[in-house]
Length: 139
Ligand code: HEC
Image (spheres, rainbow, N blue to C red):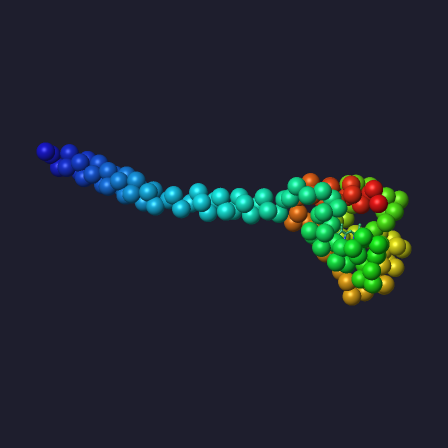
């Protein structure tokens, strides 16, 4: 063997070792899919198939707006809201209520319900917010 051939052989051997190491370490990976599975579950947990009315209970809307969304000392009634809102408008509102400046009605709310802040539901699936909006619009 010439010197050059030895170098080539050494290189090939080196890559063979790297390749084998790669195979060995890959064997430890089967833990990955299960953690990925859990992550997948978590994402599906924030998306429920519940209808709009159930969602207002699950997401805690009723804890401020009242058992039947009739309004409490903490938050206004969510009745007849179709006169002020469209489905899309409501979805946008729920995603970012603090940036909504709804005119006189909201000035009044902020005065009347000073100690309560309508939380943002921007982390929820838009489909859920859509179902909530549809439910609210029927009230
Ligand atoms: C922590 C208490 C609280 C929770 C929980 C809450 N809200 Fe509110 N909400 C308020 C307050 C207070 C207002 C009055 C507006 C303001 O102060 O900015 C309001 C206003 C609203 C309005 C506007 C009413 C109008 O007359 O236009 C809608 C719609 C609404 N909330 C829907 C919901 C829905 C749907 C949920 C659940 C997904 C929810 N809220 C959860 C406190 C709350």
